Each structure stands twice: as structure tokens, then as C-alpha cells.
Amino acid sequence: MAATIFIARETVHREPRVAGSPETVKKMKALGLDVVIEAGAGELSRIPDPDFEKMGARIGSAADAAAADVVLKVRRPISAELAGYKPGAIVIATMDPYGNEGALAEMAGASLTTFAMELMPRITRAQSMDILSSQANLAGYQAVIDAASVYDRAMPMMMTAAGTVPAAKVFVMGAGVAGLQAIATARRLGAVVSATDVRPAAKEQVASLGAKFIAVEDEEFKAAETAAGYAKPMSAEYQAKQAALVAEHIAKQDIVITTALIPGRPAPRLVTRDMLKAMKSGSVAVDLAIERGGNIEGAVADQVTDVEGVKVIAYANVPGRVAASASLLYAKNLMTFLETLISKETRDVVVNPEDELVKATMLTHGGQIVHPNFVPQEG
Image (cartoon, one colour):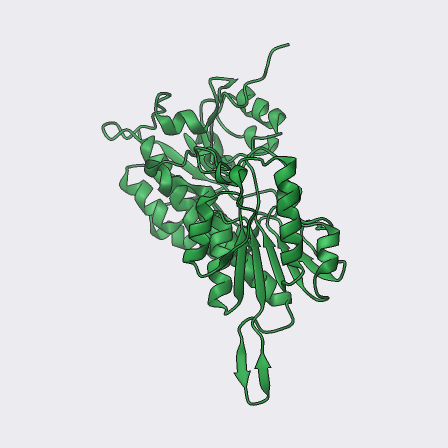
């Protein structure tokens, strides 16, 4: 009997994205899977129910989750949803596990096998499953669009008979996936762009996009990257030197975009009120790390706030602001991972605990929290 996949309508955080698309439904059906979509799941991502039905999905209700072998979601299921899943079901979603031990224990208690897509290892095989990259890419783009929408001047230099409009100066802090896309988007809009990052490899990437790299390039800087390609926390001494350089630079900028996140930690404070005070009145700052506490002092989640004369934009769930695009990419990430769990011989869903992708992402299994980063410590 074919495995049943249930794609849920999101219930929390005003989440507009959906974990399936017509393209991924078509692929699931080709694999011999039954697909049930909760009614209205794709509405806010511009995917009406008939688009899913055309690809062979059945439109159902939340109650259909009880018969599902696999549940695909954007956000971690809440208690009310967990109560409707059958023991042994697989749940694949963005789980936000750090600091949410109670939620992990609840999923383990429901005897679910759960996978956190944001823990996907950064290896070649898993590139097409990397939700952090696919969603951060869109967040970086949207950050520039949001900044441009409240910046009451033109972004590109314009030479007219009435005079010249100078190009906006944009400074991007953090040159990961979101930062690099912000740089590229700001450059497309004609801004003069500079950027900073604590990873040495970022310098070349920033330059390749036509932006100027700003950093204190000492010995500590040269060693500031983990094997996985993430930024390492820097010493207080380095942070002080970098902050002084950045403060001087920020004072000359029109728009600042911050993107700094370290997995499992609060977002580092990059921009202080004093730095904002030094900027020209009417300048704009965008904080892409507000869900982890924010990079900018004075930023308020889901608001555009006036802080020391600067308009500080701090929307949570920025990929959700471009949900129609974000959902298509997210659904493809999940589909690519799900495909690795489908037995080519039996068409059953099979979890191989020795697979490197399973090892990296499986949070709960067999009634226990199994991921080494989150197993409760005794004593």
C-alpha cells in the first residue's frame, strides 16, 4: 500500500508559506505516493487547491493528518497538531530546536520521527535540500526591497537636466547567503554597496559582486571560520576594533542591512543606538535577525521604528513576505530530502539511521530525542 503524504496548512506565526507545490505533488505521485493537501494550504502562496488537484493530490482537512505516514510542514507542529498525528509518523519541517527542549520532548512523547530541515549538513549532496540557503536568498532580496520602499530618495545615481541625484550608499553586515543576495540586489538598483563579514572567504565573494569589503583584517580574522563554513564567535578585543571601524563607516551610509546569525545563539548586536545617531536623519536600517533578538539596538519585531532618526525595519519571517516564491523553493527542498527516504523497490518510507542526512537532521525517533545536540543531560 502506498505511503500517504499530508501537506498541512500552517496554523501559527501568521505563516503564509506552504510545504508543497504542484511540481512537488507531481513528483510524489510519480513515486507512487498518495498526497493529501489540507484545504487552503497554498492560498497565501498563490497556489489554489485546484492547482494541487490537477497534479493528483486530494484536498482534505486537518483530520486527514491522522492517516498520514509523512507530514510536511513549514513550522514545527504545535500541541494541537501533534495530537492528530499517528504514532510512528514522520514529520519534516523547520523545527527551530534550539531553546525549545519542551517542544522536542512533546514530539518524542507523541512517538514521531521528526526531521529539522535547518540542520541539513552543508555538503554537496544536500545543497538542493538546504532550506536556510533557499529562504535566506529571498530574505536578502526582500530586505533591499523593504529598505527601498521606506527610503524617500532614489537608489541609483540619476543625471538629469535639473541636476544629479546621488546614488544611495548601502552597507550590508554579514555576507552569507542573505547578505550576498542583498549586495547583488542593491547593486542592481544602482546603489554604491559595501559589506563586512568575519569570514575571510567572504572578502572575495563581496568583491565579485562589485561591493567594497570593510573589515579589520588581522590574524584572528584570518582564522574566523568553522569547518562547516559558519562564522565563529570573535574575541571581545576583535569585536571592539571591528565595531570602531564599522561605526565610522556606518556614519556615511544611507541604508544598513544586518544579516548576522550564529546557529543556536542569540543574534549578535552589530549596530548600537550611538551608531544610528551618527547616521543622517531619514536613513534606513534593516534587521534580518530579529527572530533571534536582532542585530540592531532598538529594533522592534514586525515594525518600522524610528530609532535616533533612523527608520529601523525589523520584519520577522522575511521569506514569508515573498511567500509565492519562497514556498516553491522550500517545497523543492523538502521533496528532494523526502525522495532519499523512499525505497525504490517497495515505495515505502524507510529511515536509515546510518545515512549522513538522517544523522544530521533527525531530532526524535522511537519515543526519544535522538539528536546529540538536544539529548537531555542527566543529573
